[in-house]
Amino acid sequence: MANIAKIFANRAQYMLQVAAKQSQIVPRFYSAANFEFIKTELAGANKNVAVITLNRPKALNALCNGLMKELSSVLDDYEKDKNVAAIIITGSEKAFAAGADIKEMQPNTYPHCILSNFLNDWTRVAKCQKPIIAAVNGYALGGGCELAMMCDIIYAGDKAKFGQPEIALGTIPGAGGTQRLTRVVGKSKAMEMCLTGNMISAEEAEKMGLVSKVVPADKLVSEAIKLGEKIGSHSNLIVQLCKESVNTAYETTLQEGLKFERRTFHATFSTDDRKEGMTAFVEKRPAKFSNN
Image 1 (spheres, rainbow, N blue to C red):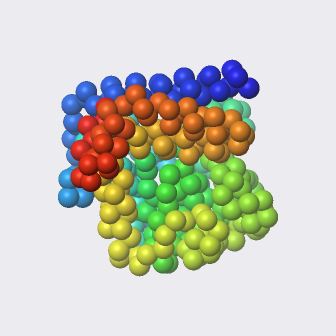
Image 2 (image 1 turned 180 degrees about the horizontal axis):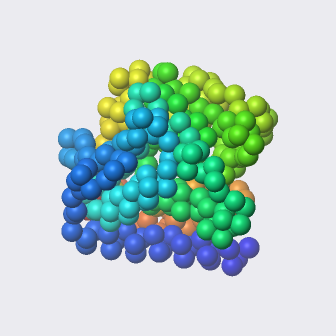
Image 3 (image 1 turned 90 degrees about the vertical axis):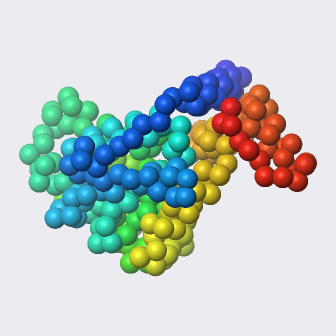
């Protein structure tokens, strides 16, 4: 147990070091012309919220390998950009992502899946250090639902539909559908969704805790941007540490998670932003964070 606690403490210190290095990196700019399957823009009053729009309208934003590679690439860039505080992934009003690209997947064989470690590189979203908000309109099915669950927060339009219909295709979810869904909604509901393939509404998803907030479809992205701006008003450094601590709750026992949280809390006392935040509170003024 002591060794595990030490590992967690080291991870917290590493996060501090990585975030400090990120503050030295020169901002980069992105052009939608560079991508075939996604669109990108910087939004918000301070242009510190990155919006990634999945853009395969004829395929209802089905997740093909090309799209996932582009998504991973732009996340690499946004993660290095000190001016990006939060990231939004969204689709169209008709579909966030209606699933993986079945036409592309259909010819796969078991040896190919094993030797290519199929879907392993689809987890980039879940590994991003910066907070990611899924803004889900329309269908989020199969891989689309799994992609949304890889994000940190899910906002849904009032017409959104979630589901894991892989069972009807003679397979099972392969990018976290049986794992993340179970941790969020519990065994019984996850079993029902995965074994039947039935879809649930945005309202049902909110009741289960899968979705944080349901808003009118035409206001979804703007509400997600407001959320990103709120997150961006805090220290990016401390936000990343807090995200790591919350995620640890899913990866370990309660006692080890509490140790990690406490050590990460302690680690914040080595930062300028912790000192500034508490000093500003005492002096009754807005904090001016430096991400150090």
